[in-house]
Length: 112
Length: 113
Image (spheres, each protein chain N blue to C red):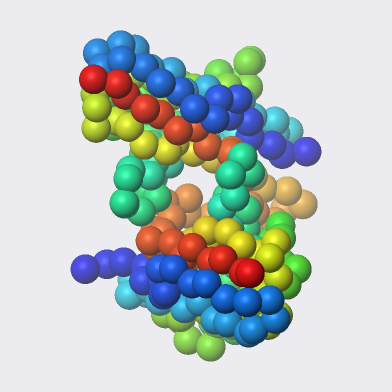
C-alpha cells in the first residue's frame, strides 16, 4: 500500500544547527515526492519536488530509492524556517487512478 | 491576486445543523479538492473534482457532499454534522489533476458541538 511516514511530530533545533526532517515512503511504482511547508498564519505551499533537484530557501531533499526516503535537509537553520512541513507522494495505480498521499507532518521549531 | 478563497475561517456549530464551507479559485484551475487535517493524521482527502460536474470521493468522504456547478467554486457541504467532523479543512486547486503544485486556501476551523 502507498504510504508516507514522517516519524517526528516535532523537531526542535538551535539556530545555525543542521536540520533534517525525515520522510519515508512505501510505493511500488516510480516515486515522485514533494515537500510542502506551512508557515505560521500562511497557507500551505509547495516547497520543493524531487524531480527539480533544486534548493529552495537553503533546503534540499534527495530521493533515496534504496532506503525509500526523501529527507529534507538544511545545513544551517534559520528562525524563519520554523513551520509545519509535510512530505507527499504522487501515486498512480490501475492506469488512471491518481492520489497525492500525505505524511502526518513535522513541526519544526528553530530556537534562537 | 491568484488565490483560493475559503469561507468562513472559523465555524462553530451544533450536531445536525447543515452547513456549507465555500471555496473559490480565480486561476481557472480544472482540479479542486477538499482535505481535512487532524493532529497526527496529516492531510486526508475528502472529495475532489477534475472539472465542472465531475466529482469523486477521496479517502474520507462519509458525511460530506460537494458540488462543482462552476469551474471556480467547489463548496463542501455537511448535511448533518457530527462531533467527529471537528477538524481543520482545506480547499486546494491545481491546473489539472496530477499537477502537484496545489494552491491552498487559508483553512476553515470547524467545531461541531
